[in-house]
Length: 330
Image 1 (tube, rainbow, N blue to C red):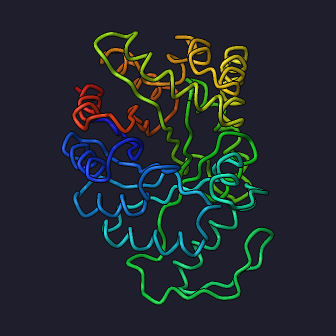
Image 2: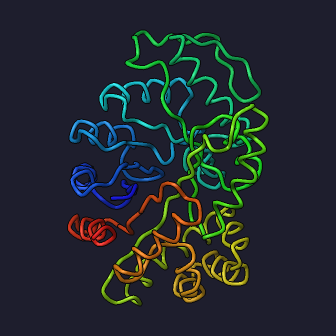
């Protein structure tokens, strides 16, 4: 089986999330990524997954650098590296101002610098066991780890969509995490990754390109599309950054219409503004054969690791998610 990841943590209970990771390993998925925003704590879930599996890699997609301190992230990463026996990948990102400030009560500013400085602090703490740091967004007088990590580093992937963060990823990370990708996303991202890589004296080929892909599979293509349409409506309507991303992918008029309706609380009009062409271009959706063909297209476009993100909510049954995992690989 070619490399394929699964993103978990939205909609499913903690126990079902762990079971999904276990089944994904059994099927042959190479990695399971725990998302966060709402739902369960990602580090707790990833630890439970680590203890229930033996081979599958585990990652965060992503851990926000604003809602946890850098030392807290480093401690969690080191513990997960221990419990997974070196299978853990730390996915970091800035999240969004519209989420961080009103939902967490934390000031959001200078996200690129915050990500850079968090990476520096995490690496220094795991490497040296202690860190003092005085940057533009982070100031730490001294923090001691108080235990010896299993390894003195963990792979770090950075979530990035636009030039400045992509260049930072190219400079400091082992991997890139994208979302809502098209067949052009990897090529466009690589140009900016290369700028950052050159600044650090490294090759862009050292950076793995991965992307999270909302996934909906059904025998009936329309049913599958309709199941994933609310995901696009919400992300375009609530997050300005995703609205920009979708607009730059060629769906500006539809994104504007969906966002305007969403802002006025008209969810049905927002859903109606999401065309099938947008669903097809930005997700892995349709029949099982549609989904498998789409995964092949992403791989051919330069994405080394497609990460499927099955559509789920509080009413979703575990069996539905497992059926999606199997349909995309059989």
